[in-house]
Amino acid sequence: MSINCKEGIGGIKAVYLGTFATFGENTATINGTTNIVTALATGTIYKYDCPKNTGSFTEEAAISIENGTIFYTQTVVAALHGLSSARSLELQNMAKGRLVVFVQDSNDNIWMVGYHTSAEVTAFTTQTGVNKGDMNGYNITFTAEEKNKAYMLDAFDPATESPFDNFATITVSTSNI
Image (cartoon, rainbow, N blue to C red; front, side, top):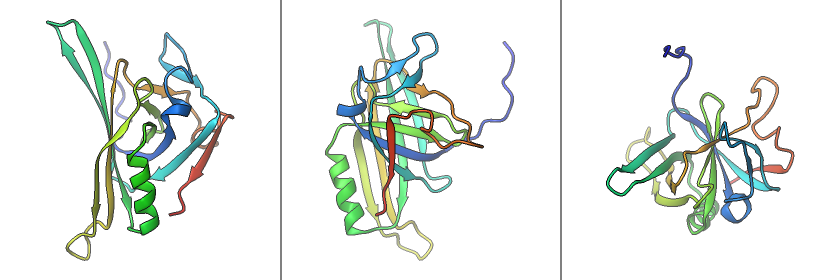
C-alpha cells in the first residue's frame, strides 16, 4: 500500500443544517459501492460559516467483538462569532430539533452526519470572554450515532462551483443573524 500525498489539511469551513424529517434516512440516493451521495431530497439547508481553526468533524468507531456490533459516533464542533438575541433564539430552537448536518471540510469535501438516526445538539455554550481578545460567541456540538460511516456528497469544483451546486433540489440559506 502506498502512502497518500501530503495535500490534505485539517479543519472545517462551514456547517449546513437541515431537518431530519427532510434529509434523514431514505431521502438520499447513495451509491452502494462508493458511499457517495448522488441525490438529495428537495429542501432548504442553513449555512453557518466557521472562522478558521475553530471547528472539527470527528468520527469514532465503537466496536464490540463480544456482542458482534459496531456503530460510529460522529461529532461536529463549530464556533460562531458574535452574540445577539436573535441568534440565541435561532440556536436554541435548533438545539431542540433532530438534524442532518452537512460538514464542509477544509479540503472541500462535504460529509453527511446523522443520516440514519439524526444528529442532535449535545453541547451549546454562549460566552462573552474575559479579555478583549477572547471569543465572543457560541460553541456548539452536534452528535450522531450511526450504523454507517458518514457519507460524502458528490464532489464539486471549488474553482467554479459552490457546495450543493450539483444538487439542484437544495436551496442554501445563510443566516443573517
